[in-house]
Length: 148
Image (cartoon, rainbow, N blue to C red):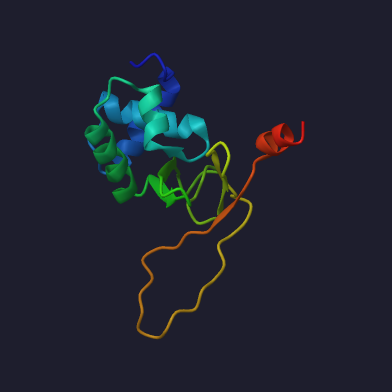
């Protein structure tokens, strides 16, 4: 068992991976655990810092498999960086259908789960594959530092 994941949490993570149709591996358990524990979208580089021994390509593939299996969503910030957040539609965690806030100073992104995405009407015959809304500015910590 990974030192960063408790026994109960590890069982939940394994079940999430199995239910999503993904092979359960120590790497997938740890990455999903990191995303779940963060409770906010994390960039590839943030995860890489937490897990320096993981190959960057392997991490990209792992994150992509989570998105494809619908156990994580990704959102791109104005900085062009993709961030990933674990979600489970049947729990109170991040459901993926909400806006996000990006701090332009520190790069932290948070889910605004208490708000829903606006409904957008597209021309007849068009099929929407996804949508994202990123509100940006300075988080409270960065705004406070600026005014000190």
